[in-house]
Image (cartoon, rainbow, N blue to C red; front, side, top):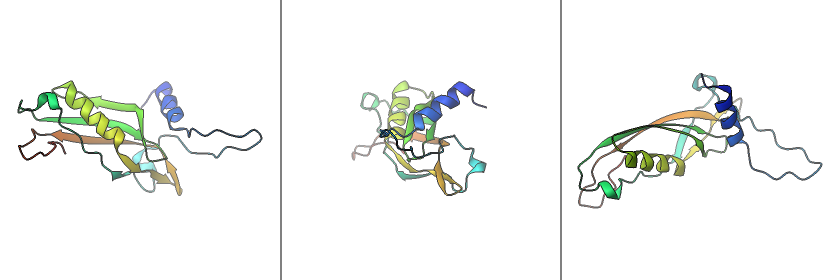
Length: 138
């Protein structure tokens, strides 16, 4: 279970950044992080940003898998402050995987017909690029 302070930080990070005119009511957005079994429709990826094999590791022959966990907010964007990276064999892979996750966009989870925030886990695999110009990551 997440500590309350971390959960509060995730909720605040998912709040919409709208200026509200004096005397108007703000839109109410459900920004609580909802568990997978509590949603009607889970998060799905719309645009997958391709992870880029780190230039400084080209020629090393290294392969890596990076596991990431983050919150997809009701607007379908990744909350970058929620990103947790399980360290791989090299921090350069970790950075490249995190950057790709943040650049990706998602269809948010839904609960009761409304978009909600949900925690997502992904695994990104890096393989050495070949000489044909492939990026070397999946």
